[in-house]
Image (cartoon, rainbow, N blue to C red; front, side):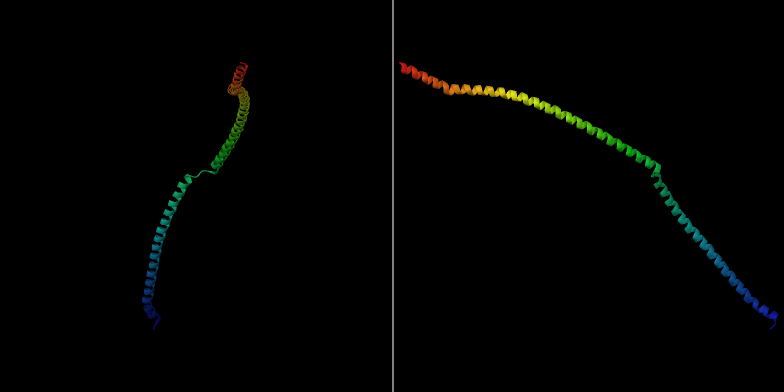
Length: 157
């Protein structure tokens, strides 16, 4: 076969191969386009999820306070606790002094009251002794004296 003839017989094979390669490339490009669309959709979904979590993080962040604010608040609390300790100690010292003063006043008052009660009890004991003496006189001595008088009067007659 001659070269020219061989060339014409190879051309349909070459055309078929080019057509096949063209189809394969078009399928590849279509698949790449589809992959890009799917990748874009997935990226968009992930971005929406990230945006949602970012908004949630921002909302939580609004309730946070700065370190400076926290430390300032801590110092204020420490100062307040120190002031309360000082006030408590002052009140405790004052209460102790009042208690000591009240104890002294009560002790002095009880001592005076005991002295007065001893004097009153001594007077009551003196009166009691006189009453007992009078009763003894009235109960034992008067009948005895009366009996002696009667005996003496009757004997002398």
